[in-house]
Image (cartoon, rainbow, N blue to C red; front, side, top):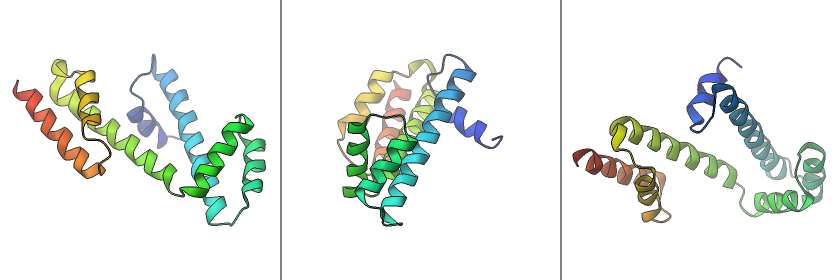
Length: 140
């Protein structure tokens, strides 16, 4: 658990207190771990759709509809959970960098506009674009 604490705090950007942030992010990590494990059971272990749904019903606090939607997504898009998490971490890292470099000049609306302005692009290109945005904002 000790090794997780810096990671947990690094991810949490909106906590009211360190305890709130830790609990919220710990829940997110556990949920994400469950999603990755669920996708693995479906694909690597060859579980049927129904077996995955039944397992999720027993082990997740979600509605049956949400479970079915999630399991079906894992079936048709096996690496979606990992791709989503990688994108989330990259965007949080870019935001932290922008906040650090820009300080009081950081504008969350401008940052979001920059993220969305390019549409769906690879994370490496997004990083290049956001770094250029940070440089433009810093030069103002």
